[in-house]
Length: 224
Image (cartoon, rainbow, N blue to C red; front, side, top):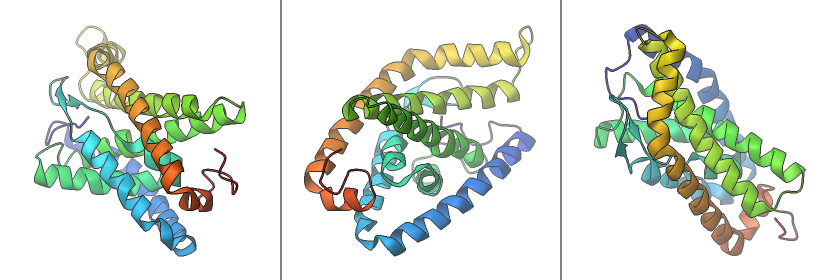
């Protein structure tokens, strides 16, 4: 993540784009509904997109044709739900491809599925599960966003493994190789992203309590 322009075979790129489309449509409907019901959250929505843009632009060299970086998508998933991040992720990836030559247009569907769909859904699911069993909010946010970030790279490894099977180990061997290389940079980056997201959420709980209450991120009384 991001997989570079032209790196995936055309059929693979098209398939991942098709797989991402339903999530994009669902996300667009969710954003429309959220802004209609809670117009005061526009700035928070923009801040979530900006957070993802900045963090995911901080790339490090990794697997050939790809790179390692935080994703920043966990914050928006926890605030607005995972479907919203498909749209915000698409905007982020488009601007990065056009302005930073980071990723690409042909691989945008694959990158979106990894960063804007798989990662946010994992982060949201882990957070809801941990909160449901009464894990402390800070720990739940840290684990959710870190695991969401790692899920992004697991999907990217899957995408690369399917496109470029290992001559000996096949698809499975290729996926394991990509995962092992990604792990060197991505595990510490995921932990760092988790800690940073906890700090941002603490800030929002202090200065944007009304908006978070409207989104049901915190209770009306302000408790997390």
